[in-house]
Length: 217
Ligand SMILES: Nc1ncnc2c1ncn2[C@@H]1O[C@H](COP(=O)(O)OP(=O)(O)OP(=O)(O)O)[C@@H](O)[C@H]1O
Figure 1 (cartoon, rainbow, N blue to C red):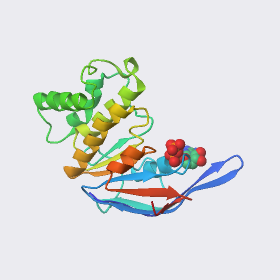
Figure 2: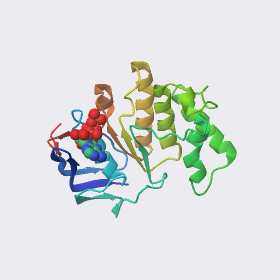
Figure 3: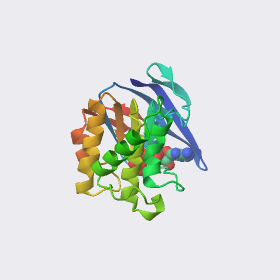
């Protein structure tokens, strides 16, 4: 599903006045593409991602996923979101968190298929032994990988990941990049905000956010 933003603007009100964070963002990312968004801290990457997934509304402009306006929250199978805050359910184990989108898929997969998919994703991300733990019993970098596994488990058409490697060391980034590439090669539209050069290097292209707009990378 193609993700398109046209003329997206967003201004936040602060005590000392309005701050125009997005001043007319235009972008289009196609199915099968793995695209990164670069930009200095505070340039508006997270603000843009919140609008792309429908968590926040633009002041003007529009976002379309496969030609249709985004709905909030987006259905997992259509658009999976990995926010910086991760949002793992604390009352569920890691494996239960990762299984959640699969259980919401229709047609619903068999229990064996759910178990296999969860084990495969956790194993590929190097956290295969942590499935029975709760999110507060694992490190933040492990939680980040668990949240990525959850985002990908249901085979979403679109993945929006905000700094998915922020808390990972070099050795842990490789498997994350392989999963993101695989998702794109299987046809997903993958858009990732990141500060990490090695993530940009693996992407098909990079969009640079500066001055509230997409500029040449
Ligand atoms: N809900 C909000 N209310 C007010 N200001 C906000 C809000 N969300 C973001 N901002 C402001 O908008 C600007 C962009 O923030 P954003 O989090 O999108 O940056 P970013 O590029 O993702 O930064 P980082 O790389 O540090 O994660 C910042 O100046 C921030 O303070």
